[in-house]
Image (cartoon, rainbow, N blue to C red; front, side, top):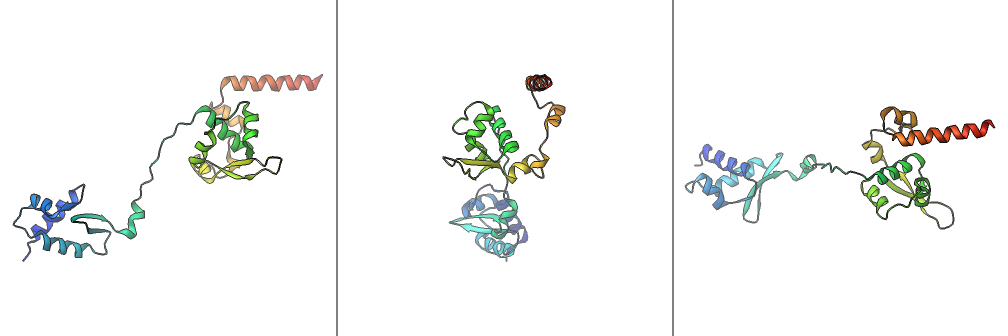
Length: 193
């Protein structure tokens, strides 16, 4: 006859272990007078069909999540990525002007995009290719994705902040604001004359 305390001791040993245990390992914890083989069979039956199961892999035993429930415990790791200023500018251009080609992004930024810039944004799943522009050379064009909207808490592209919103939150550099005002004033003066 198997004692309930012996079952509990084997169960606790397996539960607390970070790695699967061989019967000899379990006996080191609970003593060699306990029939670990029989207790493992009892525990295996007890946990059959439950949220966790006692399984034997090779010669070692351990508890694991039931295979049909493993999706519940899949961890989504948030990998913090610090984007360069160039990457942020590129992302903003695609968000506000998309669909755009690489050449159009470079024209708006005034500099070439580094080789892996678009790859980084694609890997982050914030942009994707939206086909090819129907012009000579048929360049790829890029748009933002639903993941981009989700990450930034937007319902749609229409929810992107405008210039006034960006100024109010301090997200525009002071030099950008000054340059914008200068060009706006010069344009007004030219139109007045």
